[in-house]
Structure formats: C-alpha cells, structure tokens
Amino acid sequence: MVLRKPKEIEEIKKRLLEHYPQAHTELKYKNLYQLLVAVMLSAQCTDKRVNMITPTLFARYPDIHTLAHADIDEVKEIIKSCSFFNNKAKNLIKMAQMVEEKYGGKIPEDEKELVKLPGVGQKTAHVVMIEYFKKNLMAVDTHVFRVAHRLGLSDAKTPQATEKDLVEAFKTDLNAIHQAMVLFGRYICTAKNPKCDQCFLYDLCESEDKREIKK
DNA sequence: ATCCCGAGGG
DNA sequence: CCCTCTGGAT
Image (cartoon, rainbow, N blue to C red; front, side):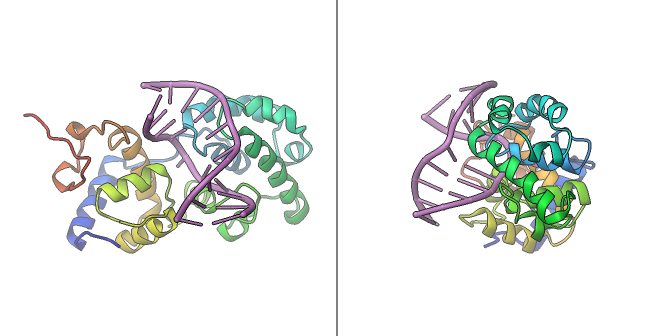
C-alpha cells in the first residue's frame, strides 16, 4: 500500500529527477550481452566489485557463443570474488546455451523472454529493459526497496509487491525514477548511517531511521 | 556484525 | 511466505 498523498508523491518524483537528471547504471558494459552478464553478476554484490571482474570475463568470453562453451571451473575462477559464484557461473553458461539454442544466439529483447533465461529474474530483466531499452518499468533492488519503504511509498514485504506500489504511485518516468532511487539509496539514503544531513527529501521523510540534523 | 542493483527452490 | 547460495567491504 502507498502511504503518501498524490502531491507528496509528485514532489518526491520531481526532486529525484532534478537531483539525478541523467542517472544510469554504474555497471560498465559495451553491448546487451555485457549488460546482461554484469547485471546477473551484481546480485548481492557491489557494482564496483562487478566492474573489477567483467574486463577479464569479457576478454575471455567476448560473446554468447564463447560463454556457452566455457569451462565452468574457469568461469568460477574469474568471478569468484563476487558472491554466489557457483550459482552464477552455472547460470551464466546455461543462459548462454539457452540463448544459442532457443533464440538463435540473439539475446531476446523483451522482459517476458528474458526471465525465461537461467539466472535472470524479474529484477534483472527489468534493469536490462530500463537501462538498455529505456522502457517505462520499475525494478526493485535492495536500494529501491529500502528507499521506497523509508519514504512511505510502500509497506509491501516483497520486491514484487513493492514494484506494484511504485508503479501505482509514480505511473510515468519509471525508468528514470528507478535509476535515481538506486543512486539516492547508494549514496544518501544508505542502509547504515543514512546521510540525512545531505538529503534533499529530508522534510518529506517520516522514516524511523530518520536522523535529527543539528543546525 | 551488516550490507551489496537476487534467483531458484521448497 | 521461507531458505540457501556466499566473497568482500565496512
């Protein structure tokens, strides 16, 4: 459920978009293949860590075909510094194999096909559609989930239900808002020790985590 | 100790 | 809904 008045929602939206006008992912990529792989690796792992891994990974496996025929232990070795490397290595290769077998080597360009790929869930599919295809979708990661709850934009327990609340609240510019909320959550509305003294939404915040600002 | 742009399975 | 996977930074 959304706990905010329409006027407040519009104000939050306005400030987010003003503060992060050209926001986009901090993952480094050169094409759809690289973006998909990078987002798959980013589960429970910082973007910074993913960006340390991907240059080696993409040099060794520059496309779907080479990844589909990769040795799993070699992939594990390259990506092991990011979490869940067993699952991720297995899923990366299976994903590439399915793209070759079912999609003729071409990564599908819509979310309903993307989520059929091993290791690609709702969040990953939406991030790819938002970042690469500029689709009007919301994706709820750990940052968006936390920010949405602190701002009273959702009280839902799951990312899926939170996404529904955010779509209902904002309706338009969802992709730009997603990107802005990620950066806002990463650098200002952080999980631990949120930087309330730097927050441009301070006056609108009713979170229990809100900190008093000494003036 | 908690958190990082989650997914799959039960 | 729950659980597991699981390294690195703080």
